[in-house]
Every structure is written in C-alpha cells, then in structure tokens.
Image (cartoon, rainbow, N blue to C red; front, side, top):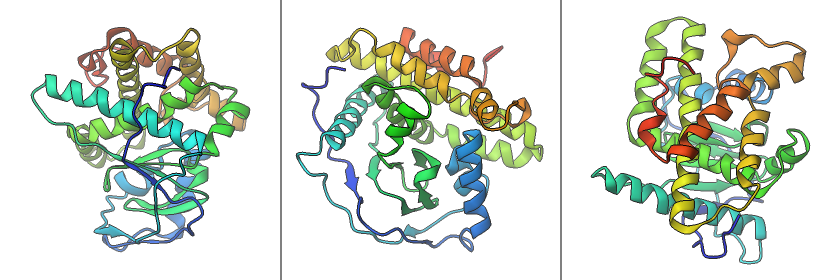
Length: 289
C-alpha cells in the first residue's frame, strides 16, 4: 500500500499496557457466561462479539470504566500504519456522506492488549477486531495481525487494512441506522437461524463497504499497489464461516453462519471494490448473496 501521503488519524486511543476492567451501567451488565459465549463464538465461528455482548443481549451502557489511554508513540510503525488506514477511511467516508448531503461522524480506534472495557462489555483479544456501536469505537489488539498472517494465511498490508475498513463499515451501518434495524428484526424473529441470516447480510454489507473504501481511496489518492487487492480477497476468503468451521471441527453448519461463506465475503468485497458505490452494497434486497 502507498500510505506515505496519508495523514494519521487523531482518533486513535492507545490503551496498550493498561489493565483491563469491567464495564459499568446498563441493565444489569453482562455476566461471565455472556463473555465466554462471545469468546467461543468469535474464535471458532467468526461471530462478531458485539452481536453477542451488545446487540443480541440488548445491553446498553451509560459509560465504560475509565481506563488510561494516550497517543501511540511516534516510532511505533504498526500503530502509525493503522492510524493512517483509519485516516484514509475518514477522508473517504467524509466525501461519500457529503455527496449524500449528510455529515460523517468519525469513530475512535482503540489499541489494546489482552482485554479492555467497552460500552458493549469487556473486550478480549481472542474476539479479534470488533466494533462497539454503543461507544462508536473500533477495538483491535494488534497481535491479531500475527494471527491473520500465521493462522489465516492472509499476510500483507492491504489485508490488514481491510480488517479495519470492515469494522469501519459497521460504523457506517450504525450511523445509517442499519444496525439498529437489524437488531430489532433479530429480536422480533425469535428464530436463531433467521437471526443468523440477518447477521450474515449485515457482515457482507460491511465487506462491501470496505471495498467501497478501497475503490474510493485509490481513486482519490492512489493507495493500491499490484497484489494489494489479492491480499484483501485472501483475507476475506480466509475468514468465511464455512472455512473457519471446517478448520475447527471438520464440517460446516450453514444455519449457524453469521458472517457468510468465503465465496460470499469475496464476492461482496469485490462488488464494493469494483463499483465504489455504497448503493451497490444492499445485501438485504439482493436476490442472492
């Protein structure tokens, strides 16, 4: 990726080295069982922990426990990289929202190690990167990038950028009210398979929005180099529900999918990448995924 000309975002909170804590507020908070469920679902099945800890539990929090945060050190190359990627998403989505006659509200990106309090419950590194709609923050333990390379066999800077762009895609969905509508529909259905199907559509739309960012950012600032798109496609393919389930237990159960198959994730990222048009990302009205 060509990021030399990208500005670093001012919305990065560095909590690395700070001790994790509990979150406070809400209707009774989250118990240990909820946290364990979120960890297991995220690690083995690719379930977004925010869905378990926040959306499906209907958990709300007035404020997370205050924890120490600061700006990343200037000589921290990985922190600078994610800050520039976040800055690129900010520039892109400001332009997209402005074209639509609205204003983009920037999310925060929190770097942490091990665990950290969030408005959606306690965030754990085992969850992988996630977005919490209650505090509008993306959370990532940078050790995940080692897993992306070694466990998922998806190395490369653009693959790493895709991960952040996907989570920012969830922020865009939150701003547009899509996430809240999906949450309400999941609560109404009373059917786990149908609720999972809605989650798949939400996740595939976030993949498409990540592709929209890639296309728009490249058209404005030429950030993509040869091989970059293939890196993102490899990452999208590596974390499909079918592949993750087959790797963890030898078979896949489609009714339990929450993020989509490898083929679906690749297809929707490519759709956003090729069109650069978020209107092409309506997975909820698509005849097929």
